[in-house]
Structures are given as structure tokens and as C-alpha cells.
Image 1: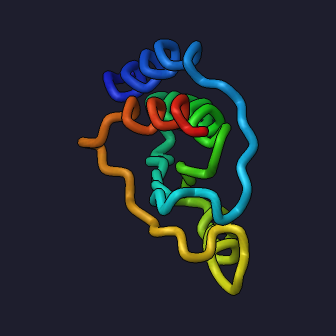
Image 2 (image 1 turned 90 degrees about the vertical axis):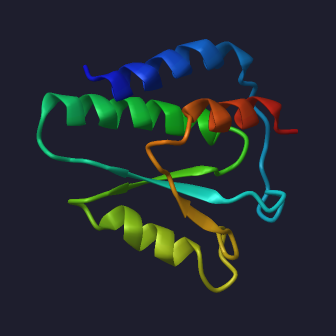
Length: 117
């Protein structure tokens, strides 16, 4: 497992105890951006580890409100659903979309997930 995946998992373990479930309603996101993370999908064991770690983090981060959306370089369906849900009065319309950069810290999203009302 590479350093990125290890960092993801450590962040997950450290933050899991602070996360509490809450309900989310469309339009109650407080203007927060929707972060987009694109999986590598390069067929390596590290890529597999990344997919599992990011899927776990996505579930925790999005517990209170949608904040992280995972895209794929090989599968176009996630982008199709994002495009569909972000238009014409649908669930994610008007949400600013920001690409997740590798320099960003997972703890920033995990911390917000634990503090959301």
C-alpha cells in the first residue's frame, strides 16, 4: 500500500470516532463546494487500495451532506450521473464543483463532516 492510501486510511481511523449521522436536505449545503475525486484505475494493487480507501472515506464524508463525489478515468457512468443531478432543479444544481487536488488534506473534509449541524 502506498503512502497516499496509508494516509487515507489513517485519516479515516482517526476521524471515524468524531463523525455523527445527521439528515441532509437539498439546498441546505451552506454554499459548500462539491469536491470531485478521480480514481486512477491503472490496474495496479495500489489503484485497488485507492478505490477502497476513497469509497470508505466518501461514505463517511457524505454522511451529513454531499461533499465528495468520486469519478473514474475508465468508467463514464459516474460523470453521467453527476451531470444529470447537477442540472434543471435537481439535487446538486448550483453546487460549485472543485477537483480534489493531491495537495489537499483529507482531514479538512473529514473535520467538516464531523462538525456539520
